[in-house]
Length: 248
Length: 106
Image (cartoon, rainbow over all chains, first blue to last red; front, top):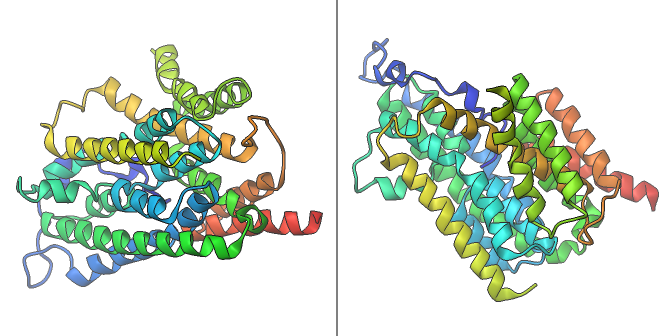
């Protein structure tokens, strides 16, 4: 979803380090006090959960109904994909092109899940439920913990607080949008790009990352007047394999 | 906008996004861990997010490129990011700057 704290680079490369519980420093089996884990998790959950309001207003401004807006937060629950979908639909993009762009943005969650599965060791019964919460923030909090018990706690508390707040504020934003009138007049049409930039900034570190971002912007801007809405994003996604091909 | 096609887009997105989340938790480690796949997975969101930032800042529903108050909003967000502001503050800075420029421009 959405957080500057969700930098893939911050996720430990070697899970074996994470999987070995740290030596307990005090009484209790966990390497970290439960209260510290809960505090971290709630901090992320509440801060990001509140930005569901911006999504609710943006979605309503793009022409989606309250039920449609809430369905997105309840069922998709990965912020960048949600913003991308309503942005493309609002610009008049075809539903399939819009959904494709949103889907490709969601693919990164598969890689979070891959790292979390070894850390959390979820039972097959819990896995389908936990999967819905596998997003930037829950992964960042869980992967930052020193042992399995803390990671499970961090994942659960972040997921619970973020899911509850994100959906509540989405509803409030969608309902409030009609009272606000034209979202453009309040500058709320700038919320979407700001969200994308905030997510992007911590990712752009190396040379290849900068090249991919620059090439994607160029492709998007060139294609924007030429192709139907929603398609330029898909063309710009080609910047990733292009940069890799050139670098090899 | 057509209600049914919008619902279809919502359904397809919800299904696809959930499927990849579950896939990640379920496949054996190593399958997605090949270096080339990992590099692509790292660069793909960067390309998408950069493109979306540009499109939603400079694009219009009429498929034209414009420079308007949203640029000021994006600049404010960039400054907030450089100052390491929290996520919510970054978004608020963009919204307020955009609204301020529009109010000043009448």
